[in-house]
Amino acid sequence: MGMAAGGNKALNSEINVTPFVDICLVLLVIFMVVTPMLQEGITIHLPYAKNTNKTPDDEEHAIVVAVPNDKQIFIQKKPVPRDQFQAEMTEIHDRMPDKLVLIKADKNMKYGDVRKVMVEANEAGFEEVSLVTEKSPGSEG
Image (cartoon, rainbow, N blue to C red):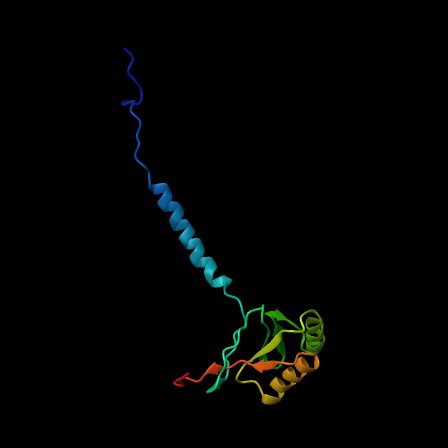
């Protein structure tokens, strides 16, 4: 007369991995798309030098000033108008006078433009202002 719908009444205790694999693949695609967007910073081709000293360039020890060309300037990756650079550095010095300033200037910049940035950082009150360079290929040390 009446038949049991669904057939076997035993529970299936096997794990179904298909939804898990689908979620992992979706997350993988999302990470592959988002990761290149997370890389921030200013592209600067640093000049080469034979004798270099490694200095900590994290925000705890130094203020990094990036100068990709004579019209742009960045303080800690934040763009600053060129004519307001010294005022901004003076304000930073009032808050953090013990930090050193590291200037990352592009190797195609004119010496006079880089020197002007160094002088303005020094006039803002910072005693230690240094240029960041890359170690020359083939040099030991």
